[in-house]
Length: 62
Image (tube, rainbow, N blue to C red):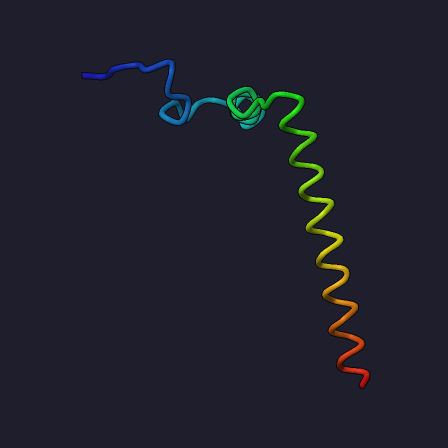
C-alpha cells in the first residue's frame, strides 16, 4: 500500500531541488534578532581567529 505524507518532503523524490531548498529555508526561518545575534557571534569568532593567526605567524617569525 502506498501512503502519501505531505508533511515529509524528503519522502517525495519527485520534488525539484529548488522546491526542496525553499521548504528547507521556510523550516529554518529565524527571528530577526536571532540573525543579528548570530552575525555578531560570527564577527567575534572571525576577529578572534585573525588575532590567533597573526600571533602564530609572529611566533613562527621569531
